[in-house]
Image 1 (cartoon, rainbow, N blue to C red):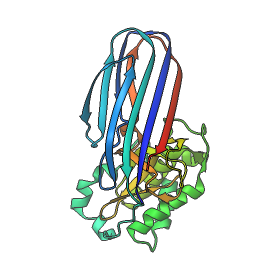
Image 2 (cartoon, helix red, strand yellow):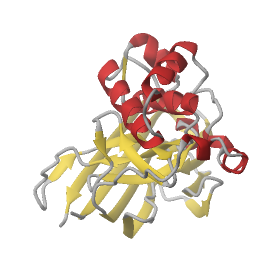
Image 3 (tube, one colour):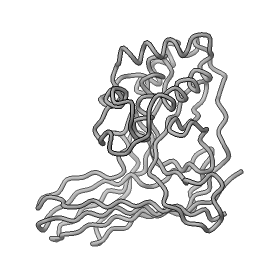
Image 4 (cartoon, helix red, strand yellow):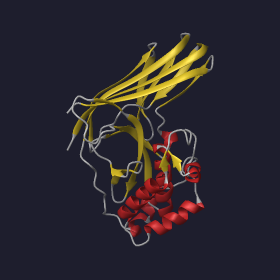
Length: 280
């Protein structure tokens, strides 16, 4: 089953003193691929800004904008209509021997290496060795994702935007970013190329047409086991019509929805809302 979905992602900043210069990058534009078609997408700001789009190293569409007029508020609204595809099936064509091939290690080295958010962790590496025993790569991906789902408790505020997989594992709780990072540690320890995916999630599996729900900025993983395919460890479900993908990279640092620098007073508030409507 496929869905047509509208997403409106609004981010607002307020500053204690006027900001005189602001330079920003927004990664909020969904991308088209094998299971997703983008009908329309735009990023708008208030105050109006000069903006241009480019595709970054990871294939993400970036809207870059700067503002030089003094301002005490900034609002960024990304709106899109996307057609999504059915649930993804695991790809089972690669063996463990295939994953050890020099050509594959060279091609996907960036999705096998450790990062600040996905660091080498001896305890999780031991878990990974136990989970993969007797399984093929695709089933090992499912085992790792479901293990992270079972071991971590979803709790907002337990971790922060800068928390690593190790931080989340030690706390045994976190949000979707943490579930994805812990799963990536397990998969990379197994030798499976795996990447972090950011996007949105419609929160109702049987969402009614034309009903608007408070959606979520969301994160999940994709693994390469002969081809790329996605799985959502936070909810322990395959990536399906409720998932709208925006960006992928090694970890959260490569796909942060909005980042930038500015000159002026400190930020006093950050309001973020995501509204998702199933259109068909």
